Image (tube, rainbow, N blue to C red; front, side, top):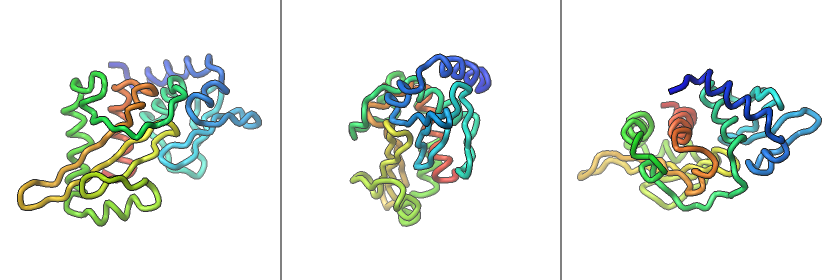
Length: 197
C-alpha cells in the first residue's frame, strides 16, 4: 500500500490536470477565480485548496492531517454531481467493504461506542447545531462531511441485555465520490475529529 506522501503526489498530479470549474460543479464546492482556489466545506468548516498546487489553506479552521489533505484531493478529483440520497449503507455493505470491515470496526465504531454508549446526553450535546438528527438507535446524527458526501453516526446505549453499540453509515451515493478504501480512512478521521477519540 502506498504511503500518504505517494498518494498526495499522485492526487496533486491529477488535480492540476482537472478543470477547476468542473471539479467545483461535480463536488458541490466553489471555484474562487480571484484567489485561484476551490472552496470546499469539510465537516462544516470552509477550506481553500489552491489551484493548481493542491495545497490546503487552513486559515482559522482546525488543521487538517496529511490523510485529510489526500481525501480532499481525492474527493475533488473524483466526485460526481450526485447529491446525497439519505439511504444508508454500513461499511460492510460498501463495494469490497468486507475486506476492511474488521479494522474499521476496531478503529472507528468500537471506540465511538465505548466513549458515548454510556453517555448518550453528551453525544447529543456534541452534535446539536452541527449534525442533523435522524431516527435510529438511541441517538443518531447525519454528518455533512463533504457537500455531496454524508455519513450518519448511530449510538445505542448500554442496557441490561446488550452492551453499548455504535454504527457509522455511509450514504448510498458515497461510492460515486470516493472508493471504499478512501471511505475507510474518511470514516476513521471524521470520527476522531468530531468525537476526539
